Image 1: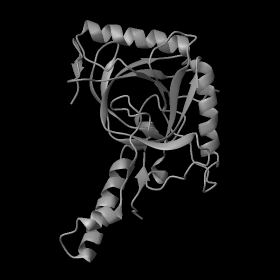
Image 2: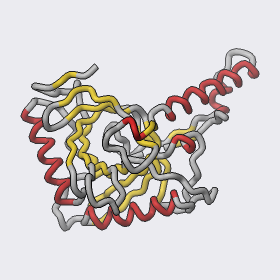
Image 3: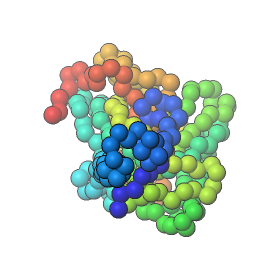
Image 4: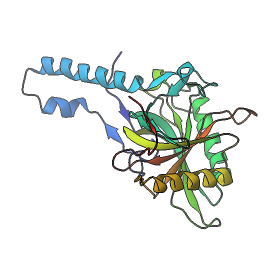
Length: 257
């Protein structure tokens, strides 16, 4: 059943700011009616259905991607172009549950944030409902500072398809529902464990390759992305994302339709 929904992720995946909150209001739609109210109600219902279907279409079957191995629902994407060291991807809008933790250490901050979100999907919400785990888990890394200075890290779990239209409301005031708009990102993939050292190294390597190719990207933040359970020991897959400015650049690359 399609319903009007309200949602809000990841500190604005499209601009590295905080995620935008919005409220799709039936009253607002009806105030702008110029036809019969009953007809407009049906049209508004159709719009709500289309929005729900659009959102659901971006959470797909994990078996379609080689490194989506531990959950059944994943955030899908289209590869625009790629090189030997990175690729450019397009993501449609997606919906998440997120939390922000401030600390000097990325590793400790992310552990605290992950625990908070795991409690939410385990039933710490107004409906007391358990929510299946999805991939990836995305961490927004804030402004670069000296290692001893406090930094903000926003960790986000992707909402599964069945909860996109009406997600359970968090009971922890540090957990919030959020939305990322459609966006293009540069991606560098790597194995092993995502931690402060590996994330810093891979992010610097991605920036170096992009600057060498004359690619424009947002430098005020980046995203660390993980696809594995903390208890997975082997064949791990992680990524670094940088937001694309202007057209994607993949010099000496394979262009993909």
